[in-house]
Image 1 (tube, rainbow, N blue to C red):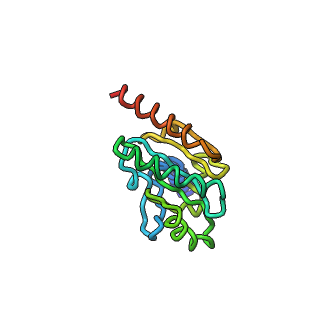
Image 2 (image 1 turned 90 degrees about the horizontal axis):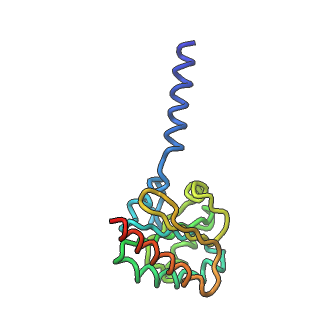
Length: 166
């Protein structure tokens, strides 16, 4: 009976630790096959996660605009990270497509969709802006031409409010 109680206690602790794991620290692979985390890829205090797939046409249209924003705001403490959600059988397409599309920010592979599930992402593309404490500051689903202006205005507001807090 005592052993049964200890096993239940250990299982509860393991489950708690798994659920308490930070989305920023979930181990994933980058497009070169290296194990990394979002936290390791993020240089700034503001993290922009771009959830995309190779088969999503709006995703492919958004990348050049997001690459421009990434370049423009990297000196303002904003880190863009692509979170690819392709299935394992499509992963061979990710690296060549990322080069063709002009990604200028890191790409991680969320093949088991753990990051996507943790942030309750249900469609592509979805852009999520987080702070280093994982607070969701902004979420944008889909992409049509002109959405980059909306996203940029939100980034400016977030940068300004971060300056005010300091």
